[in-house]
Length: 136
Image 1 (cartoon, one colour):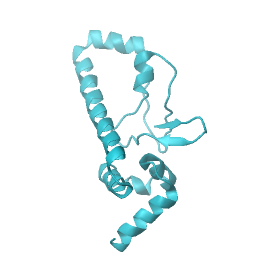
Image 2 (tube, rainbow, N blue to C red):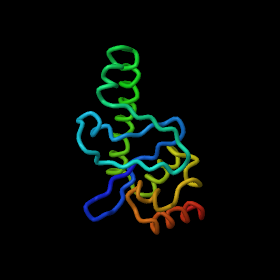
Image 3 (tube, rainbow, N blue to C red):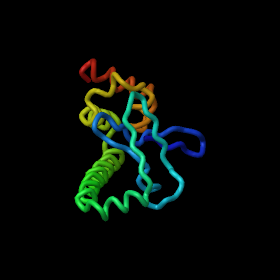
């Protein structure tokens, strides 16, 4: 999931790996144009539902509303932790947290996407990775 700023720069917000989901939830809830884009990098299963239909499902199946509430709560907590890490941790520590959260993803996505997610250049990411290899 990514955002494109006014200068055309892509900012990766999250990676949705196996058994995860992604959406522009703010756009969906407010029924306004999306701020975020979603790009599938691998074969994926997609689901689409209209806002009105989801509201009806919640009425028809109350446990489904609870299920989605729990998913959204977890996503919100994860998003808050990411914001805190981006404000408070040095780049190297953010990279280590990224590897902890997404252990298999480095072999699956281009380095520039990881750098974008971390808010650094791909050259600086390469420097961090080299430091870790050298044990610094």
